[in-house]
Length: 128
Image (tube, rainbow, N blue to C red; front, side, top):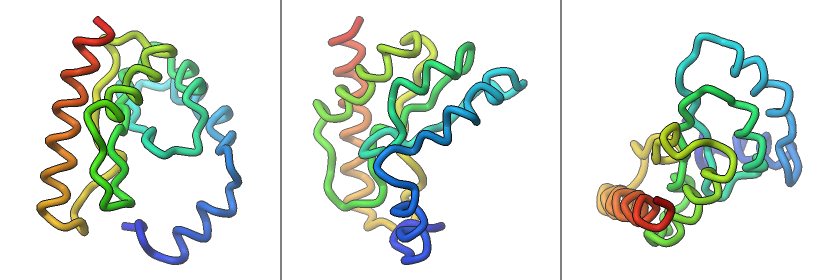
């Protein structure tokens, strides 16, 4: 799974403050037959503007950080979605979590999903 495992944490820390390697990967994904690309966006080191390289793809925007027990506010979720809308048409954005929540406390996971739903609704209202 990776989250919370020292080897995964060390590897991510070795990538630096900005994960620019996606600049090489996203154009290839854009040309592929893949329809959707899921990305960690909440507390991510991937510059959001790089999602513009995924032209023609549905982008699943991870607006919930699963590596922390902190529950995001709907405003925080909406802000991530709003930032993504600067680079991807809103009809191509799907709000989601950064990854799975299997190892997370069930109550925290449920609260994060409530925040995701409320934040997505707020983004639809705010950025319509």
